[in-house]
Amino acid sequence: MTAYVIFDIDVYDPEQYGAYRELAGPSVAQYGGRYVVRGGPASTLEGAWDPKRVVVLEFDTVEEARTWYDSPAYRAARAIRERAARAEAIIVEGA
Image (tube, rainbow, N blue to C red; front, side, top):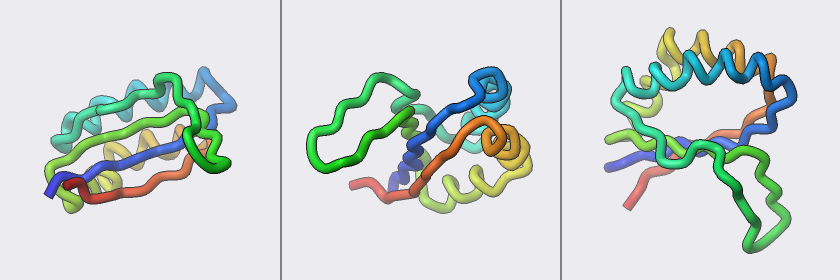
């Protein structure tokens, strides 16, 4: 079943975040994922959620998404992101 990785990212160091993006993008493709949403404008319809930068990735399965997230390629990117931004992320199965 298709899986989606959804991030809400608050970037506080745009230069470092650029370095993260240079590594993260190829790692997503390497593990069979694709970007569905990559930080476009977002507006809240209900509740108090105020997302900063929404990123949605699609993988064929939850297992593939987890393999990507735990991969050496993404761990290197994630270490940079953690210095450049605060992020919240989930994995959810699609319909």
